[in-house]
Length: 123
Image 1 (tube, rainbow, N blue to C red):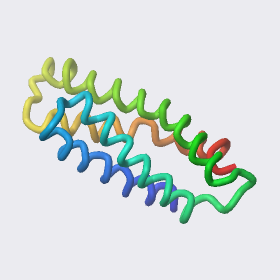
Image 2: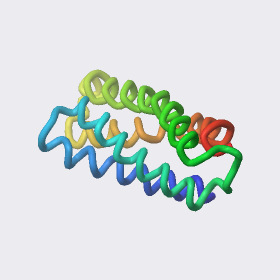
Image 3: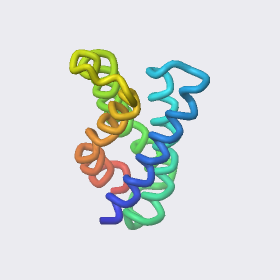
Image 4: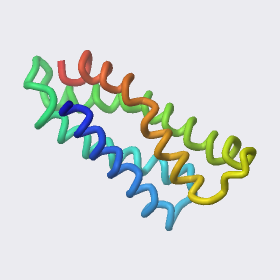
């Protein structure tokens, strides 16, 4: 439950920061910048509230956390861009399509991220 709560907060940080970044850069780049912002929030909250201290040092946890999140970022980016640029326009969805696509994209790697962080990041 704590992982879901932390993940929900980090996802909100991700989506809201993408909207802010979108004022200065394109959609695709804003997804990457927002993911990094959400990832930093998630790391500190997960280390503090979700996973008990393990064998990994904070530095090692951060490195592995980043590697796990590179996979999740790729999942998020592919889903978000594919939905916003191809699927939603084909379906005639125009209003808030980038935000809806990004929300779905952020949710996609939830399970794979949990397994990766439990097994490698905070072991």
